Length: 417
Image 1 (tube, rainbow, N blue to C red):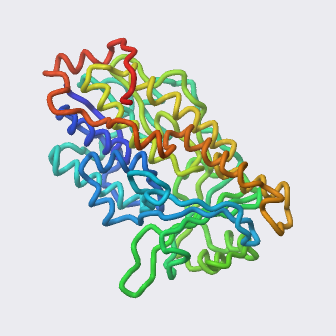
Image 2 (image 1 turned 90 degrees about the vertical axis):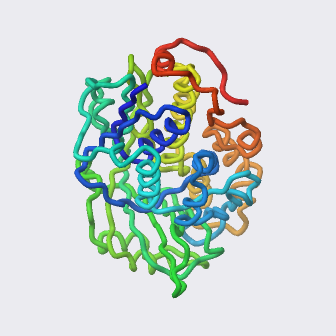
Image 3 (image 1 turned 45 degrees about the horizontal axis):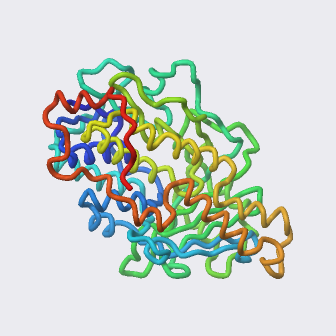
């Protein structure tokens, strides 16, 4: 079975590794850019995706370049604590959660692809712009402005802008809280997320990722997805934000570069696949970065697709397992997902509170957090009990003909349980 993947991002690289691990080894990735660079800022990989990376044999490499997230705390603009919860192993998962630089994660996956599939498995300067291809399957993993998706849905148009922009950057600072903590701060008008993405340097400083979501006062530059802006544009929006554990204005002021992104997504699709073509990752379900699920869901897409193909269940099974989940996450993220606690606390106590229990009782906070985990597929007990998406030795279909037949096969099999 010959597979062509459009895009050498997290989704495409994980797909190549997953197919290879499942016994489908004739795989090539076509990437539009001439030279891959470790670009981007921070990303969180949640336990249900970390599980998949570990099962691909890359757990040690991930641990070397990421920070094992210990806890997540929500605060208001005055530094008052709304909600705090353990994350990863401390929350009862069998697998950790990692905060990591997106570019470092991408290059870790790239090196693994080149080692296992060969240097020729990734072809740069080779955009995929249509559906014509010399393969049994074309996988569109080419991002929110996917050429493959455009070929499948030519009338869809541009991504949908929320009216918000994201300012994102990184700064070096001394570790805050546990040194493995995430902070989400918000007041109903803007949100700030802060977390470390690398272990401390020998001098004790740590690379901290931060992002600010803010209502735009002018039209977002939707054609420029990596637009640098001046610190002077950003700093007034955080000047009076307080946090006992961290100097938020000082952290932002220490950034070397700041980038602006429009907060965009797309409406869920009724289908991702046509004959011998399918989508995954941001090409299939671009979503707001709420709840740290974008990269995570892409990794799981890749693993489920490889399982579906290698076991003969085909694209129908892949969509049955993945499209309802990711569609629900896209829609939930539009309503702020688990971060809705920030908005609720602000609406009920815009000037702060003496006791959070009077504003947002613990039972309500716990229910919001649990509901999102269930919707996105990472409620601890369910995830820990689920069987692996790995394909057992000898279980994959024998030969190209059998594997290719699984692409269009109509099958109502259930997922591992």
